[in-house]
Image (cartoon, rainbow, N blue to C red; front, side, top):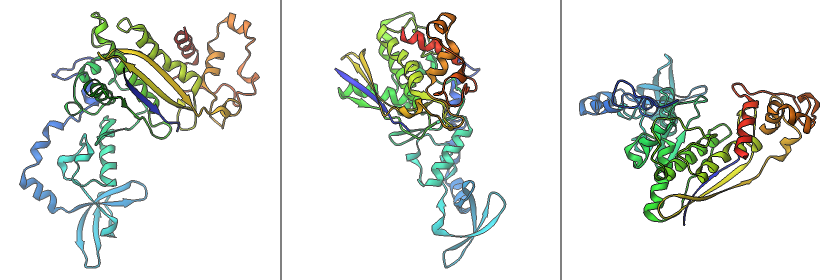
Length: 363
């Protein structure tokens, strides 16, 4: 029996545009991706190299690109920065700039000049273009967009299903797909580690890995599924088997009892999770287990300013019906000492609706 493990640490429907590519592609691949070969000829490269661009450290921006105007014998450089300033700096404090053909590159291991400034600049340029996923060798770097993107629909899963990583733009589905393919191909267990600071997107990307695996592993069990529908991890869809549905339904339960609002993150996981998914030899999901550890128990009794205890307490008080209020003797938020700051709300989140999702998942 093969398995894929997904540990994490504690810290719109798809539509087609007027072209041949799905509308979601604008959030997956740079619009000028196919035009970069036009700037790789020798003449253009030589003209760019003659400009002597470098990265100069900056207190506010991290790094600013500049053009060397004069190089002195003691290593000092006279540099014109892009912000209009002219400075003098030592060459040992600068970093090299990559040629234009590497602009918004999808795999940063291909950079000619692999340095801190180039990595930061590439991630920033991709992020400003709506491209949140970037590879760096075997790693996939994700920059949290703090908004919903239409790149997780069934249309997108179908785009990535059965494709190798190098065939598609960077995406968490590609990472999950590679692990699934290698598990079946090599008959070896695979692991996906989601790590980062609070608010980096570990919880959401772990959910997307599970969403992808539940989809592709359950695909042969139904012929009624039509690509294009957005996948709701809180609902048991017709195409899923009971086990796959249970796996997806674990998410709202874990979030209700293990996640809380912090100053940095409205849905911060206050525990670690180790998710093990077992597959049979043909690739179907046969079982799954979720282990939790390092739960922040102290949050139950006290929360810092503008923070909440675990979501379930607010969901219950906001979503309980009349019978539950009577049976459980529920009162107003202000009556509970453990809810230090009363009814702290989360923008865009309806605790009453989330409570119904939690109850449905537990059924």
